[in-house]
Amino acid sequence: MYEMKDATPFETDEDDFDTILASDITFSGNIRFAKPFMIKGKVNGNIEATSDLLVDSDAEINADIVADRILIRGKVKGNVKGYKLVYVAGSGSVEGDISSAQVVLEPGSHFSGQCTMTSGSEGIL
Image (tube, rainbow, N blue to C red; front, top):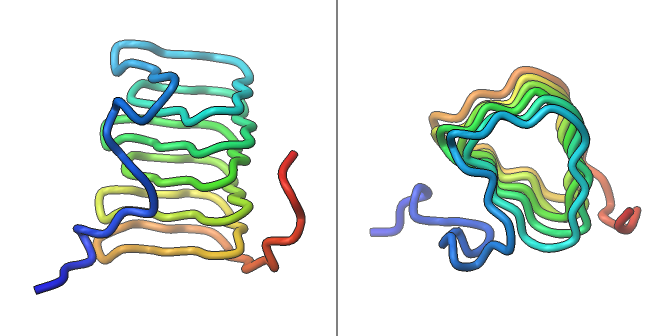
């Protein structure tokens, strides 16, 4: 039987990511990237991307996020803008506004903020 928890918006294997911020790292500042990026640690600042972002289950983000497609399995405090998709998994939480062409909130996820559905035609940074 099909279950939502088995669905993912993009590949989530570590081998599919060009850069991984490890779980033992705390980063303060702005992050910009153009290739798939996975965060397992802590980030304070802002995140801007023209590619995919995966916030892993143990990650803690205190930042505004702008990326193409975003999968959130951990905790995010800040506004989240996905040009194509924002996907909050059952283990994920967002405290802030979400803006995207497509938004998915899995059962068990936590969201506190406003959600705006966009046309997806705004383009990438």
